Image 1 (cartoon, helix red, strand yellow):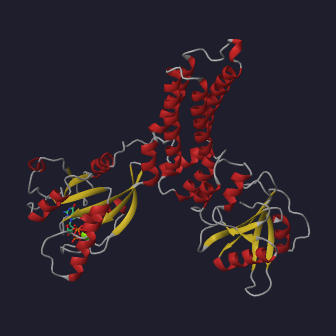
Image 2 (cartoon, helix red, strand yellow; image 1 turned 90 degrees about the vertical axis):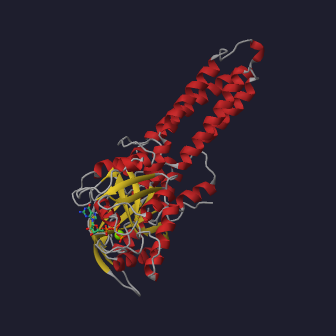
Image 3 (cartoon, protein in one colour; image 1 turned 45 degrees about the vertical axis):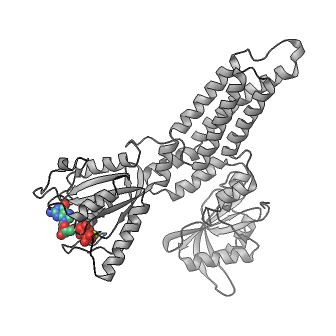
Length: 451
Ligand SMILES: Nc1nc2c(ncn2[C@@H]2O[C@H](COP(=O)(O)OP(=O)(O)OP(=O)(O)O)[C@@H](O)[C@H]2O)c(=O)[nH]1
Ligand SMILES: [Mg+2]
């Protein structure tokens, strides 16, 4: 279903302009195609950056000075012959180089196809291939760190170790099944359930980080809501970087939803600044802004309710508190650099005083956000960040529970063996030792071209 016999080409650097741009060619004809592009007469020296000139012909003719590097199979990213051509980072030049490569017999790579080939040629396993995508997509240092660990094989190693224990136990149980009349049991009674328990504990250990891992990888959406002029945009700017949202003393300044991803305790929070919500707005633009604010409030994972700490509470404040009291939220008393007009404790709920002006209370506010997001603010790198992995491990864990119950109930060994075989199948699906083509399609389709 996947063809790996032809030679593929794509621009590996992002769309747009840059100091350099890299065209990657992989496959049996990579070196020949590179030679055709550069007019080289000598073979490329392996792994040596070599200066060359590319001069393409025909329509869309381009010329550039480039650096060509040849990575012969199997010591390359894909495991195939790979040539990387670094030209100047202009879309016109890079497109020209790609079309010349196409003219010389290459095929345009599909999204993720370089990494797919690395997987199919067993340079990396599926966990590592997914880690490549996560590393490229990371928006917080903790996301990048978790992906790096997976790329280095930390998770694969732990899963393989679990798989080996299950395999070992399965073999011994099968041996007991095969030679029943010898009266010799390769697994002492009680040993099977103990060993199954140890494997289950190892999986539980991995799964313990899954919820936080998902938070670290996928993040959450947090909407900042409150009445007009409460200080929402100022707070948004304090977290997202000054000047992102317009701030004025005129109530009803913000109309559109503004979003910005910020790293809060290792969790990528998509902060949404919204229009001030109030009753009785007449202006049609403000009314549309309020409708959007209410919609954002209703879909966000998490809410930041901003109450102006320097002004007496109004009916609009009470309405917003009431509308959000069953939601995950952090309630903030803004402008705490000014004289307080009400006491947070009179509200009977936790309120974090902050000042966007002096930054007072921002750290406590960040911690409250992390707590409301359901994560603890540690910088520990979670082992599992991928929902596909978590799901397969949960299923493996359930099959182990069945195996343990069968072993305890002294049900014939074949039942235990069949549950353990299911555990191994699930573990191997994580690393991709056994994975259906449609799963692979689903995974690699989410890559961008050139990766
Ligand atoms: N002293 C002081 N003033 C603040 C603080 N935060 C906001 N303000 C002022 O409060 C006014 C309203 O601030 P915004 O951030 O625009 O309020 P908002 O909730 O986004 O308002 P709308 O977009 O109109 O709903 C501005 O004049 C800000 O300068 C603060 O921490 N301290
Ligand atoms: Mg605003």
